Image (tube, rainbow over all chains, first blue to last red; front, side, top):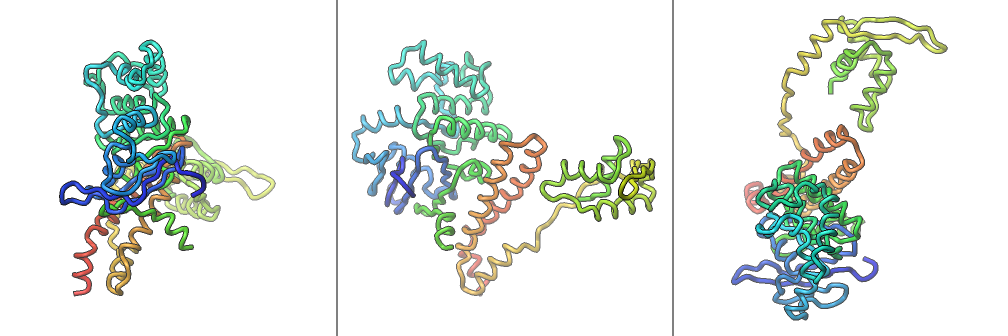
Length: 231
Length: 174
């Protein structure tokens, strides 16, 4: 790998009580690349994503974002990092039910202190981009699962983050809607230059990535790279 | 793929020359595996012999004569029957991957490595097809989806087999 990775984890260990979730996991993600983290249920892939995103502190090991140690940051610093540099898409949108879809998309901008009018104007651009123009005034409970997930994608990208973390983003969708969400997510990420860390157990979803890392029993393997190196 | 039935279906919209049939077939169904001219003319002569197509005209040209073919009513019935009948699902019981896994276990080699390498290769092809879908039309999307779902099924099998390797090793080597 040439140059400094955007995001890097090295020798991560994390246990929840007696259960080892990560047992020496390592990964490096370059700016703008889409990396799938795959593995069976309970293998530690979501914990790895949470450590990379500064949501969970590892018991040991290093997580660096643009060379800065995330695990050494205060809670406030990590929270600011998540708000300004990262975007998130979860399996079930996790939209705020009381807000309209437009307000949900504008929310990360409002939290950064952007004025309502400007935040909603920028959110409206994302509504158009994700083919959601007609749902802007509706609340999340009034839109379909696929539309809700596209709203979540728009909310993740509206701040132009450096990295988007997507944890099973199509897990609750049928094939057609899942495909639509993945296409829009990856196209928008490529256009804006955001890296995507994509946790999925679905190979068809991983097909949208540039490469995959497999997690088994809390350890990571980059099999494609190992194959290249063995040649 | 039944080339004969596909030709009959294509001829339903009107008579065509062998070359036209080949070109349409390759464009719509060939997917980087175009028909050989030998296949085209062997198929047409069989359909002619069976009374499913008939000669609609012969045009002299600079090279060989150009024959135009039309579908007969027997040909239309034949293609209708083909479209209405279910394809036999492939049971895939003679699978090379299965043989490799068992052989690796029998000979004390790493079946887990074999499965991981295969997994990476399947995903590489799935990425290629996913990229092709992005640039293709709906028909191209359909054929890529068909391949992607089959590769996905293989991958699920690879995952499940990887999860069962310890038990499998015990049984195979018992």
